[in-house]
Amino acid sequence: MTPDIDVRLQSVIKAIEQVILPALDPNNPLAREQAALAIGHLHMIRGQWPYMTDYMTICLSDMVKLGEDLLKVADGGTATRDAASGLKSTLDKTGKEKDGPTTAISQRRDAIAVAVDDLINASAVDGSISFRDLSENIVLDYGIHQTSRDRAWFKASGLDPDCAKLPSHAELIAAPVRKAS
Image (cartoon, rainbow, N blue to C red):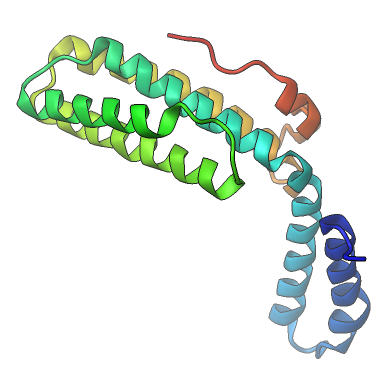
C-alpha cells in the first residue's frame, strides 16, 4: 500500500524533528533554524494540500473575472486594442476550463495574468483616460480580494497580525468568488 500524502508529510516532519534536527551541530544556529523552517512549511503544506485544487480553481476563476471585467471597458489606441485582443484570445483558450491538475490550473491562471499585465502596460502607452481610471479600480478590487484570500491561505505561518480573525481553509474555499465589477 502506498501511503497518502498526509502520511508521507507526517513521516518527513517526524524524520526532521526526531533524527535530523537532533543530529545538527548545536553551534550551527543557521542549520537548526532552516530545519525548523522546513518543519513549519511542511506543517503548512499539510494543512493546504487537501484544498489546493479548490484554491487554485478559485484563483483562476477570479483571474478570468478580472480579465473579463477589463475587456468590458478596454479602450484606447493600437497598443491597447492589440493587448485587449491578446487577453481575449488567452481567455478563450485558457479561461473556460476550470479543472484539471493543479499545475495546469496554475498555468492557465498565470497565462491570463500575463495577458492582463500586457493590457495594463499597453494602456499606459495609449489607453484612454477613462480606461486607465476604470482599470485601476478593477485591478485594485481584484488585488484586495486576492490579498485577503492569500492572507487566509498562509494563516498557519502565524505572520499575519490578525491571523486569529482569518477564515480556515475550509471556510476560505466555501467563500463566494469575487463578484463582477
